Length: 252
Image 1 (cartoon, rainbow, N blue to C red):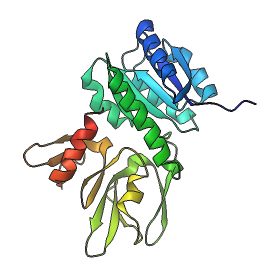
Image 2: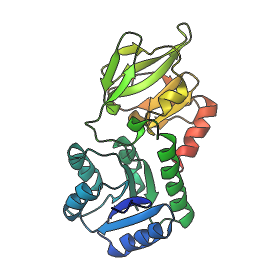
Image 3: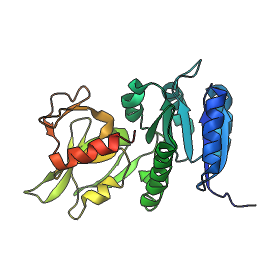
Image 4: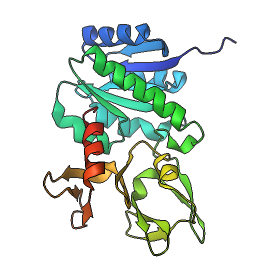
């Protein structure tokens, strides 16, 4: 059996010309070895299960089902890791894409430099998390194993709200969406935590946030506004990490 060369991508876009342009550009990239295109999510479902691509390029506006709806419906049936890049002409979908664990966002019509940036991020993330299988974009059924001082927690990525550093205890604490707090074992570093998943971002020296729940950052105060029911929490980004956060979102 011949080994697969390069990454495999599946594109779903009802605009055949747009899909073909993206497919041609990906095939021209040395990182990709197999690119398949489909015009709707129904015909893409079976090949997705069979091919098990590394990357999905999903158009948000496809007749019959949106890319967000498709991603929600298909994830429980998948048992392999993958990354999702939403691409559309509508910037309104950016926050929804992040909340649904999109790895990146490509705005139509894209520039070659923008596509190149996305490809490089995909390759970089793949290499960075190669020793952390749980760090890939995973089906929602996948659980992470996180060591605390008293037990090993088996939790889903969406259950993590943030990590906060406790200076007195000299250790990181895990805050879950059920409002429970768990102290991690000493020696766990911010680098270890950030490697768990690309959706985690450091917003200050003492806070690593799950961007799924971030809805806004005030320009003057750097106060982070979180999605309900966490809107009342006081979370402040430092100026240093706020600048990095803005750079990151310019790629989406």
